[in-house]
Image (cartoon, rainbow, N blue to C red):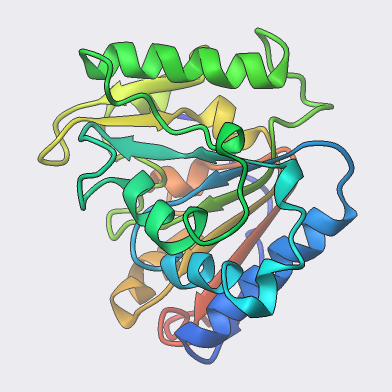
Length: 248
């Protein structure tokens, strides 16, 4: 499961008063990183309801003219094996909230190829997409794959589609793999090696129902996949105040 040791200290949690403040803080954080970066900018996106407000904000007049859209490439940390226009598709959510509303070049959108015949084939094809963009078959710790990696935190401590007690947690060579069993439909997910190849990574956590699992993450509960996430670069936790209510 990722690395064999946990980081010596948990990252601080930046608590925001409400969902709107959380969305603005994350959008500002992403904008600051993007404006300082040179060359192509790779962003791994999270699905779920929490980041949607940030995506919508990025496409609003307040932010739309500030982002260097021509240089940003969009990837997904995980995806359900459903058509891209399915309401449960992470791509579909991001497309509606952000990509269809901002001046994003079509060639900069790298969706998981769910049209492949099987989840395994989709995982293999997406891994090739990532390697082609990165320009190498192997990840170099000195050159992270992603500039920004947005992550959700599941109520069971999963991140992307790395669920507890699944073989995907042990994958150390593949960048992308398929996952079946924990959820109604199969998933395609980036593995720890690919997710951890990030210059800036952030968990986005909202809602009182996430308070308990966030406290366990901060305590580095080894039963949680998210506790084993150790990006190459900086790790941030942006949380709504209600989600941070159990932190001491």
